[in-house]
Image (cartoon, rainbow over all chains, first blue to last red; front, side, top):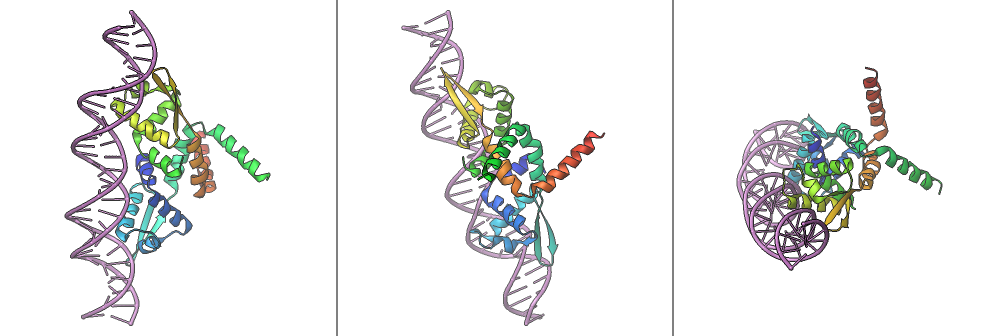
Length: 105
Length: 105
DNA sequence: TTGACAGGCAACCAATCAGTTACATATTAG
DNA sequence: CTAATATGTAACTGATTGGTTGCCTGTCAA
């Protein structure tokens, strides 16, 4: 929930990857999320717990399975409240210019 | 430079505070940045080194002083390349709606 | 030239972290 | 009911982290 928890949760590449995978396909089980990751199930569960702590992931029990869902609100909060603090307009203009240049290729 | 270095640099509240202070007033010396922080000069220097590593801060020697400057590019990169990945349009619309509602108070 | 000031460097320490192994519990399929 | 499956819990470990203290170097002012 706290800004600090979100930043800290995002600091780990494995956790960002988990968010990526949930964004790709929401509602995955712990088992699903383990697949292809070079890590034990318990390690993945710990990462998910940290993401839950930061309110970036929520879950729903379904029988013996636990379905995980990404929550985009904290990410957006940081985008709106923190990044915008740092002179965003000028940089957004730069970025749009860059995009325009790329599109004109 | 790497996305990972940026996320990890931003994970610490003291470092985010240092960025805040540099954004408020750019070109501060190590001594300036220490003022008011409950930390030794060496600790602050370490934080600044991590911010430099992530390319979030650069510096210029001036006599015996070291002037520090914030670099907004990596923050903007994350905003553009990473946050936008997560369904930004819908959330931006929500945020603007919220802002409109707040302004109508 | 000498002392004070600004910063650099390195060793050390406690706490946190990312990951493991081992075992326990709960649910579903047969 | 029982075995397999899905997840939970907990103790432990090595590495990293955030911070310290102590000392060294470089620069400026009197």
